Length: 502
Image (cartoon, rainbow, N blue to C red):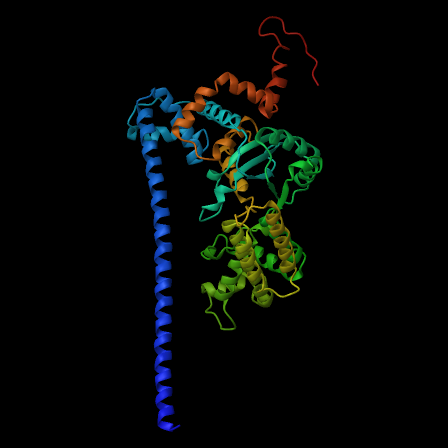
């Protein structure tokens, strides 16, 4: 065969191959574009459906508001006061003052109530909402925690979060997605008391598929007793990812000499610049209790401060750089440790963000493992978090919920406690008393119609009776009871006899 024919045949073959490749690429490109348009169409339809539902909800709210506007002014007043408390998260004493400021902007004339009336109205709604707890058919997860001591008491709170509430969210679970199904107040809690309380609560609200708890020994023991004595319920136990990660960081750094030195430098430096023009460089507050739950903010501050302090270059005398170096003397020497510390905290924070916003399923499990690959093989943090992931992905599989996202964080209940403390903090005697019935109102979404209906369902007498049955006497009540015994010791007039005291 002639060379010319071979060359000609080769050129023709290459031309056909190029055309065929171009055709295949065009087909793939067209198919990809078609799939993208189809996916976009589905997303648009879903978004359109969501917007339609929102519009319908807004119209319904508008209609309810129109009905409410025509209702009794006294009812309007009570509903408005309750909404100011639970939406604005303000103290009860603030409500009358807020009404005085905005009264001239309101469409109706309202009488300014006393703050004690606001307390009673809010408690009536709270008691009514709490009493509405019932069984639900869909699977749900329970979040359990004890509040920190307020006065001499602690509250055990149980929240219910349906699995479906987490599936369509673009972020972490919020209080609007929860329902308070359990509320118990006691001076102390141990495993047996927690077990008895959970038995009572789940007897009314039904059993969850899983319980999320922190590392507290009292709750841990109570949940273990519950699972041990009720094996037929088949309740899984989930360790809160936030507390677990904080404990892992504590085990790694709490007793490390370089970390202790770092905290000492930061503490002394903060005291040196707190009331100076260099106060903008103040580090985040380092807590004594729960220190490692917010340690990532300290790590971020250290990383940025190291960049600001710079290397060996000389600083101008009296400049911010010079003063900062003097205030945080010795920080630069810890640079190798701080680089490692900041890197570990950064990866831990990324995993926390992933688990809190996306939950746990096979997809987030793979992402978390890829993040942990950045840590050394023998890293304590890596070992512990890998163990946590393996344990809880097995729980996810045992639950048989497919690819649904499983909630693994109890942050929402910490947020609940924070809002509740904001409301009660201005009380003269700050303690856990009847005001705990505000907690159910801080969960879920309560419309004006819901509040109006709750006020009708729960009278003042019913509210007082339930509080007397469920809440122990407050410090104020105990004080008044004991001091009132002494009122009749001395006659109001006439001959006064010598009284022995002491």
